[in-house]
Length: 51
Image 1 (tube, helix red, strand yellow):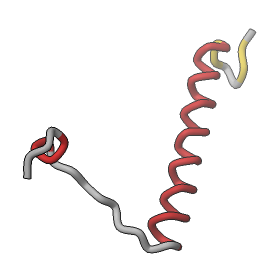
Image 2 (cartoon, rainbow, N blue to C red; image 1 turned 90 degrees about the vertical axis):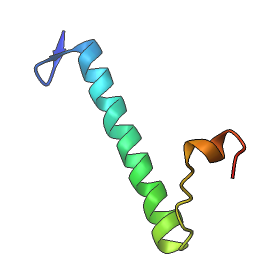
Image 3 (cartoon, one colour; image 1 turned 180 degrees about the vertical axis):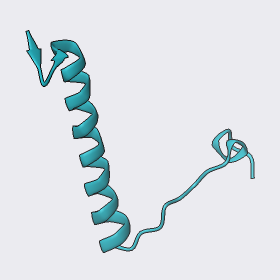
């Protein structure tokens, strides 16, 4: 069975990717744009407890 010309397993990965991207875009818009919270970036030395 094919959906949009893709095998079912490939279509499920495609749909999951679209869903994850949409959730990430909504999160970014609400939290970082509307609420104004900055994106906190960490470096590898900060991740292991260094300063």
